[in-house]
Amino acid sequence: MKPGNRSTAVMQQRHEALDSLDDFPTPPFATRAACEFLQSLNRWKLDQLVAREPCANRGYMVRPLQECFGTVLASDVHDYGLGYEVLDYLFGDDPDMVDMTWLNPPFVLADQFIHRARATSRHAVAVFVRSAFSEGEERYETLFSQNPPRYILQFSERVVLHKSAMRRRGQKYWDPAANKGKGGWRRASSATSYCWMIWMDNPENCTNTIWIPPCMDRLERPGDYDLIGNGFLNFAPPAGELI
Image (cartoon, rainbow, N blue to C red):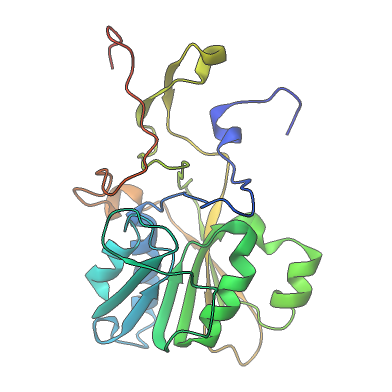
């Protein structure tokens, strides 16, 4: 990043402290895209399987999973007011086995989440990460060199994730930090590229990269961007400001 470059898109990149909740809700259409891909493999009847989402947040990934899977077990280390079990996924003994695990994990703990998910999933683990997750010598040694994902599903369009907010790409919103703290309107955007990494049986230990064509408009559903749960950072503009 160039010194002084504080554009909204660049500042939205995910650089979170180790003890942060890493609160970046996943737009539901992104999960539907991965579900469509798994359904296209014709290997499982998803409506007969049990899925786990251990980073459930406010349910933006849980809800599209419930459209496909027979059962979805949802939990999070923090209570966002949706009634999901409050549970530290990385603490204690391994949880019971499920058919598949889906998650958008805290970036700095993603390796640990993946290892635990792979140990407790019969068929597959689907992980939503920024595309740069594939980089790193240490991660290569501890994860990719031994157990690479079977598939990487790379989004060809930008998927917008904002901290503690759920916004549609291009949505206009008030940012009180804009204009040197005076506030101003912005459009939801992102400088970060995202993909799904899917672990499943991989006898040849190789990875297939597949590009997901633009699909946001097709896979969105009414209510996808409704604000549910608690803890959102959504700011109201001052009186007199027109949307």
